[in-house]
Image (cartoon, rainbow, N blue to C red; front, side):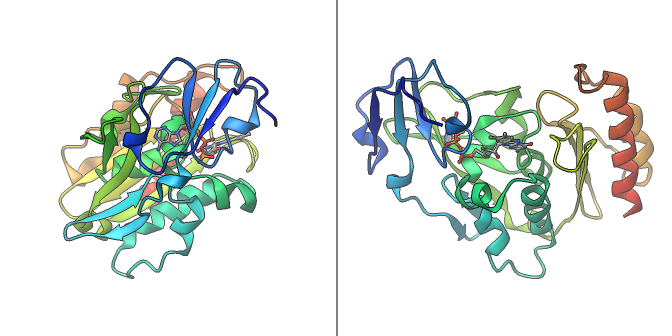
Length: 264
Ligand SMILES: Cc1cc2nc3c(=O)[nH]c(=O)nc-3n(C[C@H](O)[C@H](O)[C@H](O)COP(=O)(O)OP(=O)(O)OC[C@H]3O[C@@H](n4cnc5c(N)ncnc54)[C@H](O)[C@@H]3O)c2cc1C
C-alpha cells in the first residue's frame, strides 16, 4: 500500500552519510511489513538496500548473515552437509507460510527487528546462541546476544538510529541437531506456539516463542531428563492470553511441541 505520510526517502551508500536521526524515521529493508499497513507515525524511510552489505559469509569461527540478506537466500545457499543446524533456517522460512514474493524480498534483519511474537527466525538464532552486531550512525558496533535482543512484542534493544548489521553464529554450533516445531489452527494462520530445540551431546537449548511475547530460552541442566525439566519449567512462563487462544492452551501446545521435538 502507499504510505502518503512519508515526506523523505533516503538511500545512503554508507551509514555515516546519515547526519542525524529523528522522530518518525525508520530503516526500510524489504518493505514487506512497512508497506503492508498504514504507518501514520513515520515520515522518513532510510533504505538499507544501497548499503550493499555482505550477506552470507563464512568467517574463521563464525557464520555471518548480513541483515539485508533476503530470506530466500537461506533456502538457496549450499550449506555444508555437516552443518545440520542450517535445517533450522529452512524450517523457519517454510514456517512463514508467506508467498514466494515475500520470501524473495523480506530480509533476515527485517524479520528479526520487526520483533513480532510470531517471528520465525529469532527462536532459531537464540537456540544456536547467535549474537547480533548492531551499528550506530557513526558506524560503531556493539554485540548483543540473540537471547537478549527482543524485549517484547515489536520491542527490541535497538536505540533510535541503531541498525542490525549482521548475525554471527559460531560455526561449531552449526553442527548441532535442531528441531523446529510450530503449531497454528490452520497452516496459514500465525503460529500459536513455536518450539526450537538445538542440542549436542553436552547441552540442550530449548526456545519457546509465539506463545510468549518474545523468544525465551528455557534452562535445562541435565540432558538426560531434559523433556520433563523443560515441560515443568513452563509453569514459570508468562503465556499470551488473547482472543485467539488462552494462556493455558498455549502452554499445553508448547508442552506438546517440546515432546514432539524429542520424539523426532
Ligand atoms: C500479513 C503479514 C503476516 C506476517 N506474519 C508473520 C509471521 O507469522 N511470522 C513472521 O516471522 N513474520 C511475519 N510477517 C513478517 C514478515 O516476515 C515480514 O514482512 C518480514 O520479515 C519483514 O522483512 P522486511 O525485510 O520486508 O522488513 P521491512 O518491512 O522493511 O521492515 C520491518 C521492520 O524492521 C525494521 N528494520 C528492517 N531492517 C532493519 C535493520 N537491519 N536494523 C534495524 N531495523 C530494521 C524496519 O524499520 C521495520 O520496522 C508477516 C507480515 C505480514 C505483512
